[in-house]
Image (cartoon, rainbow, N blue to C red; front, side, top):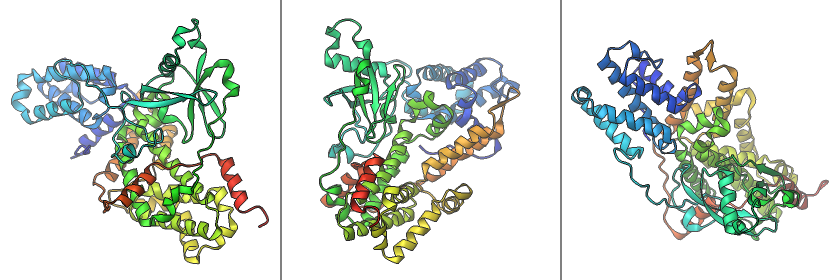
Length: 503
């Protein structure tokens, strides 16, 4: 989505409000105020009520155009907002004065409304949706090689729900489905509907992590699929069966990385990491960052792509530890450390700071960093390079080193996304949104400025030269469907088997 153009303070103010209005006014209410402003004199806090009728209508059209330009891809999930946009659109299209004076803007409005799929002017049954496989949920080569596209709450996916004995049922579900809906699908599969009444009410849905940690999900919770940990799974059981739930056995590869990590060159692995993470980053709508920080659980439906990107960052960290700790020969393990440091260097060169950070954090995992004999075999050049990387990722002075480096980068850039969320969280907690009943414009501007940095990072396309060959596809598939161990206790067990204390 191309960023809206800005030409002056008024455009910046409008963009600030469109990006951050949800902090002080729900979207449907914001649009309702805009609709009321169009049909009669009234205020929206933008000074529209002070304008004469025709000018006020033109201002409303400008606000609506900017709103639609920014919210593309999200309005399909908000039926109430979609209906208001439709009503306002129909009013504007019938306004002959606007038609005569602002034909170009009217045509742009028509195109934008078509883009957000509001089904105007007549309602039609929605087309049959294609099921989208979430990466991690199904490791199919044909799925993982496809270019990633953005997820929306109404998208349908397949998901496995396990029983206490580790048998499972596969259900087809909306991404935004509530826990109650998921349990209903599970019960139907298990034919609980034929059993005594009330049996369904005894079923609970539990997220079980590989470490054994268990969390009971509430019936009203929704969009749970994208919030699961890397190796977490959904379990359905009667309430009295909660204590008996155990995680699935660790899926440790028989031959680490299927030898792909040892066969592929560092430059090739780094290029595939960057390409995949650019796809995932590009799927994240800029407003997901605002929803994630400021609306928490309420905004989860709009943050699925961001949560998947954050999971991937964690997955890469554990990939590094998994590969190193599953490598038995000491010399080969030292070569693997060297390769990962090379991968981090190439990712930094590619301006993929997300992968760079994840690889460095993975090498700093205590289960890896304690391998004294392995690190001693590393050439001095690579030890020094890794120390530089650790300094760059050091959080001291509010990540000063990283901020200086990324400020000099020109797009395309893949930033270390958790730090953007940290900055937004600081803005959220350090000042109030409303002061004495008035909106804190300075806070809204600071939040919007942070969102605009994301636009800047993505303002130019990523172009990497990638060869098309069976070997290339094999490496691409490997990078896009890592099998990792995310249980820290198990990683430590592997570490101590390789190098016991005192060695």
